[in-house]
Each structure stands twice: as structure tokens, then as C-alpha cells.
Image (tube, rainbow, N blue to C red; front, side, top):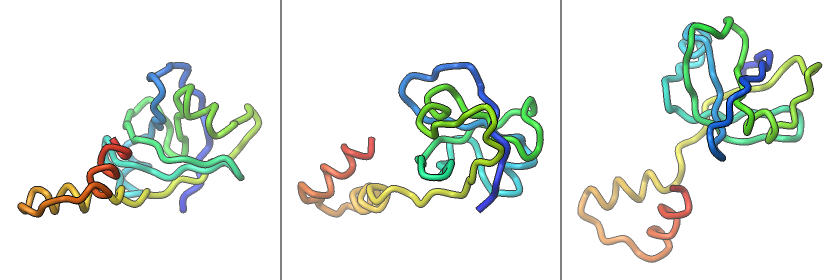
Amino acid sequence: MYYLKPKLINIQVGNKYVVLLNESTAHHLDLHVADRVYVKNGKPEGIALVDISEQMKDGEIGLYVETWKKLKVANGDRRISCSIAPKPESVVYIREKLDGKMLDDIRINKIIEDV
């Protein structure tokens, strides 16, 4: 788990949760663009997609409007925890389908739910 200083990125991205990291911070966490991270601000938590920009300082995490609201960040909050999120269960099912396996309704519904 890595703790980062939150910074509001006053852009709405359309009901998606996105965070913005400095390239150095992303490298330290072994993250790349479009990876998923688990972010937490005390009790509020969620999964967000990663974007990378040199406009962020090392040790900061940019939170787009939807993510800022989901985590209930206040301007005085000093740390947001960030870690690599596990891959969705549906990734395993997609791999099974690509390998020629027939999928049952439960697996198909899980893929649809995750999308």
C-alpha cells in the first residue's frame, strides 16, 4: 500500500473512476496506463483506472471529479492509499473462452457485469 497526497483534477470523465499519477510514482507502484488501482480514503474506497501525466508531482494522486466524490475527499485530506487492484474474475472466463471452452450463464453474466 502506498499513500499519496490527493489533488482534485476538475474534469468529469463520465461516471468512471480515474486517477492521475506522476510517471515516477506509477513506476514505483509498477503501474501503467489503464491499469486498475484500489484507492481508499478511510472508509470510502473504490477501484479506479490509472492515467499518467508529468503534471502531477511525485507522491501526489490526481482524482478526477467522480473519483474525488466517491472517496469523499475534503480539501484538508492529506493521504489516499493506493495499491494494485486484483484483476476482475471475468478476465479468467474470457481467457477460457479464447481457449475454446464453452461458458455457462454464470460466467457470461459475470463478464457482462464487469464490463
